Amino acid sequence: MLAGAAPLASGALLVVQAWLLSRVLDAAIVRDVPRQELLPGILGIAALMLVRACITWAGERAGADAAERIKRHVRQSLFARMVAKGPHWSRGKASGELASAVVDQVEALDGFFAKYLPAMAAAALLPVAFAVILLPVDIIAGLVLLITAPLIPLFMALVGWGAQGASRRHLRAFARLSGFFADRLRGLSTLKLYGRAQAEAASVVAASDALRQRTMSVLRIAFLSSAVLEFFAALGVAGVAVYIGLTYLGFLDVRWSPLTLQAGLFCLLMAPEVYAPLRQFAAHYHDRATAMAAVTQLAVLFDGLPPEEDARDAAPNRKPGAGVVGASALTLTDLTVTAPGRAQPVLSDAVLTLAPGEHAALMGPSGIGKSTLIEAIARLRPSHGQIQLDGIALAEWDEAALRARVALIGQKPQLLAGSIADNIRLGCPHASDADVQRAAKRACVLEFADALPQGLDTPLGSRGHGLSGGQAQRVALARLFLRDPGLILLDEPTAHLDDATQARVLDEIFAFAQGRTLLMATHSPAVAARFGRVLHVANGKVEDA
Image (tube, rainbow, N blue to C red; front, side, top):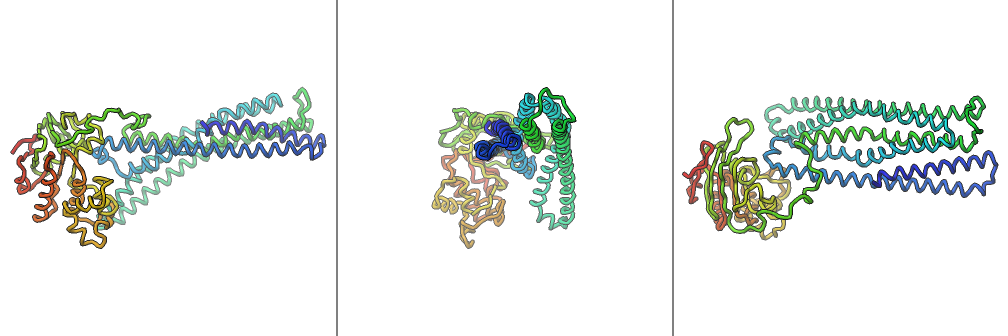
């Protein structure tokens, strides 16, 4: 509101400033008024210019602040949508496209809110208001401006339809290029190994060139829009100037009274200002096309736009599952889980019950559905049927309460760029150094960390670069030992460990799982033999061995 009101207030002061300036010039040239008497008028003009500059600065600052708040809200909403949909949904999207959407395409909204909307308010009101103000001064000048000014938005709208389509194609190409480049960068070592680096570099060059051509097409339309504006603006200003000049020379006489110097100067000073808001509007008109294209692309990528209300405000006061302690009870009834690309469901009407504190091993050949079952129990994969945790339907659990209640260690734990201690502390961000040290010891992390120059402070690359698969699994297990879950879900946690390390890690897992419910997927009969209950996944069912 402040950004939109600032140009209107500045426009009102501009009328007063132009009238004072024409009055001072008329007094100095026609009436030969002494300089001392002109000083108050000159100081008034200077004061108005200063006030208008301050109003313009305040309006631009308000628009920029509003745009930043809106972009932050949109990014938080999109991130909340990504979290709500879960990793199963995000795996089906190119990570580069998601990153480009949250960063680049949301950034495309900046010009719309910070510049386009304030300029639109000024362009809608000021030109007509200025022309109407000129009508009592000189009806011909007022009519010329009143007729020519509305033609500019009309032709700009015609050009703008093409600009919006071009911007949509440009942003779609930019998102594809972002995903394409991110995927090639992630697989650079593999491409180099198989001698495909040069070919992929050529593909990146071709994709970049296609993006350049689309960018130039958007710029061509933007320049065409500016040319339309300048043509009609020049036509209107020139028409007023020619009319006033011919009137002063006596070649044109259509007025009831003589045209004074003050009236003529006022009309000449205001004529360009009638088109100034339209010029500003045209300069930011492509921001609207870019924002509309970005919103369309976001809606396609995120399967619709997030709701208007903030998720934090919309969250109910009741949080199902909050405050539940002790070992968890798990019940699965008629559970069916499908997977993309598979005609038959991975799990079909599966049934499973785990009593509080019960430990069970989950066995079956690779690809049979063990990981799918564990992810469905953790609400990380969509499913049909009934899953109850502690007597509460899984879909009704509050997200924070569910993540505190259930601990999941997958086959490929996610490690981030940071030290080993930082990655362990993800299990409990407020854990002390002593707690991290104890957890690392229980997970046998110290066995390899102590051999490193910086120990647990050794920095890791993205995705845990610098650690083997078994070492990464142990770091993820150390996170588990910092938490207090009621249900522990483990997916092949000892697959990359030697027999001796596997035995020590299993001892620590069972010691930690005392008083907690444990479900572990494994291929190893030796590991399964340590459980009191062994389950088999076969033909989409879960059965006791």
